[in-house]
Image 1 (cartoon, helix red, strand yellow):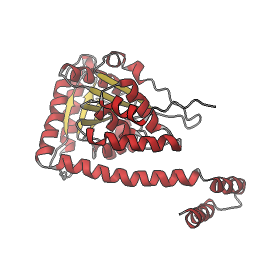
Image 2 (image 1 turned 90 degrees about the vertical axis):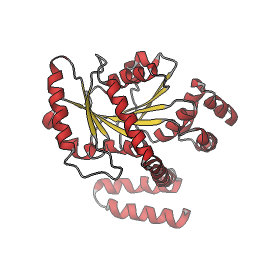
Image 3 (image 1 turned 30 degrees about the vertical axis):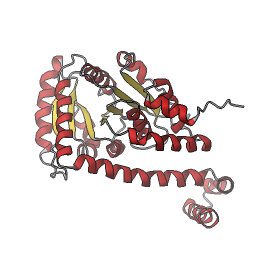
Image 4 (image 1 turned 135 degrees about the vertical axis):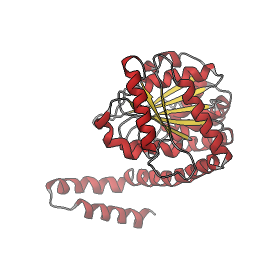
Length: 332
């Protein structure tokens, strides 16, 4: 039998509020657990630490694989540490659709940042969650804020259109791009570019510098063709080199400028308020789905129906409707 590794409720709360990184990690593990006992305890812990959260700037960072997200985050994070900030990085790794496992290698890729006590890096598997984030990214973010981290960097999986889900949990959505990528980015441009608050052309060094500057001008012109946003912000474009450490100050100044403008016009608070409401509805869907698939009767009916569905003798749509109606009638 697996040993119970849960800590007492007060130990979690005191440890988090005192900035204990070990307790913080165990608290995130707790909220990521699918065990009913862990979920109940996690809800209580989250309720107690909630008043101490929210005092950070939350930045979502996305981009296609190979754009250099991890290198950018390490260099950018180190820059922020030098400015006196405490930085937490929530890095979401893709999960295998076969084994459901994840490599969780971001600490290895951000070795210099992870060794600094002012920074905290937590890799988490994406699991079955769409949008490049983990199902518990929001809770992990709030826990880190309560532990005293004032800059949250959310690194998404980086898989394309579905990345826009991270927009619903951050203050600032940053899209990393490469110069000269051209047609291979056409498939993701519209969905993400319409959502991003800024684009940064990474790897703007050496022979790439001039093409990066050219890409900056082209993207800046293209962004002006999009409709004016509700918050009055026009997405900006910068260039940077994560290896030569150029342009990182400008990226931070841009984020700070955004935060000041959004705070002044009231959109910063409104955005977070709307995100909390959306979180409610998302979690309702999660709980309904979890309760449905974990119900023994539903499991039995599905198991009995699968052979006929695979054989093509029964409609999956009909079985699905029957299952949902059965669950609603009997358990809701």
